[in-house]
Amino acid sequence: MAFEHLPALLSQALTAKGYEALTPVQSEVTQAEAHGRDLLVSAQTGSGKTVAFGLAMAGELLGDGDRLPVAGLPMALVIAPTRELALQVSRELEWLYGAARARIATCVGGMDAAKERRALSHGAHIVVGTPGRLRDHLERGALDLSALRTVVLDEADEMLDMGFREDLEAILDSAPEERRTMMFSATMPKPIVAMARRYQNDALRISTMSEERGHGDISYQALTVAPSDIENAVVNLLRYHEAETAILFCATRDNVRHLHSSLTERGFAAVALSGEHSQNERNHALQALRDKRARVCVATDVAARGIDLPSLTLVVHVELPRDAETMQHRSGRTGRAGKKGTAVLIVPYPRRRRVESMLRGAKIPVEWGTPPSKEAILEQDNLRLRSTLMEKAELDEADWTLGAELLAEKSAKEIAAMLVRSARAALPAPEELLDGSEAPARRDGPRPGFEDTQWFRMDIGRRQNADPRWILPLICRRGHVSRQDIGAIRITTNETMFEIPRAIASKFIAAVKRSGEANDEGADVAFEMIDGAPREEARENRRQLRPSNDARPNRSGPPRGGPGGGRPHSPRPFKGAGAGGPRKGPPRSRG
Image (cartoon, rainbow, N blue to C red; front, side, top):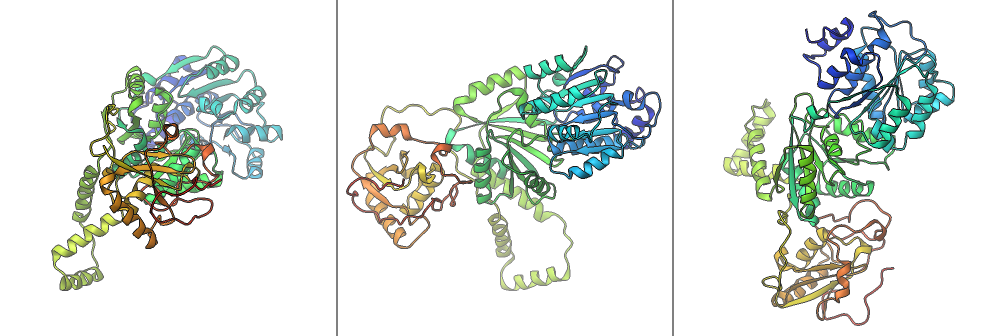
């Protein structure tokens, strides 16, 4: 029997839950040499850590029996970094110790503190909570740790990263010295080692990272892109995979806000998680993912802690992780419970060598390539649509009636084509991508076809959130030209300059004037010809990515038109001037 070394009560609970064998970390913490000892455990997200420390604390909770005593002061304390993870831990321990009639109290931020205090006063065998709320109950006298036998720090590295050191120290200092302390962490930075040295005695070090490294059920891909094409690559990845649930990792809350806004404007059902969101907003976002109202989550590392989404099949590292362990921690949210998952790194070509070195050092097999093209996405759409339409469906009389009416008016071929068109119209449009497989070679001369060019100026710049991703479609739409007709684009604080071949300049001017008079989208942006190329000094103002935080107004999200078109959102609208000759005098200031 796979669980014969465990108490019968826990063995039965595991069997009832469908377990056939223990995971590596669960097996290690239940070995004879680990019994009763302090443990310092390195284990990856998704490796079964919660059940592992639940099994490990059996000696302190059950002793030699199979029932818990009457609930009084807590015997075990589990500290987790986030509300979601704490609630998840409570659920796991409830089924594991259900037959022992364990009483578990959960104490987390965002919940009714008075209700938690009442639960503690009625007695609990196990208390699970977040550092801040636990310390609050401790200082108010609602939480008494004098009878504590074991304490678990789950995701200890993340709790330190989130600034909970002081709370953790206050809690641990209040616990009996003879308690057992178990620390679980995906990474082992120096602060974790220092804390272990202070609060643990002769701790047994356990690491299962090598056995779990790379996650056998996760396919790793690294896709090289031009730095300015990162966002478009994300769009195409989401469109290609059409994952049931996907999570996109960004480094900062500003980048989360920007990407989330851009994706929702494109038509993706997306939610955002970062430090700027309240607990109530987090709850609504996670519920939207669970009930399938949203399929994409844009998040920072810290904000994503504790998220458990069984349907998660795609993880995208929009911004590269700081190291291989962070990458595996992010990626470990997919490929769980025997399901296959995909983890994708978006790699700007200048950083490819650094990423190759990181992956080589971590011994993670990865498939290198480029993001899906528009053609590949359309091919996938066709396959999915064909599969959906060929599924056997239960049709009622109303369906047959409408079908007959349609056939009376149009041919079956026309109806099928309209059905396909209708299905495609509901999908976000894929993006055209630059070739990001390698850095572009330096040119000694101008780009072919741009030996003789005319420069133009637009009266919007970084201060008005000018961004190449929506400026380029705006120029194409207003001037009735293609992307290939546009040369260099230079964005300064209040202006944007660009070049087109002189041979089509007059046609471009006429089209801009017509679209301005017709009040088309972006008609309030003024265009004008300028003599010669912009000054060399303006080169330092080029921006291939979105504006920096200190250059943008205090607002969330990208321009209202988003990548792909529409006028920018500015603090106050301005009226456009028609295209014409060079403007006299200095450019208008936008403050």
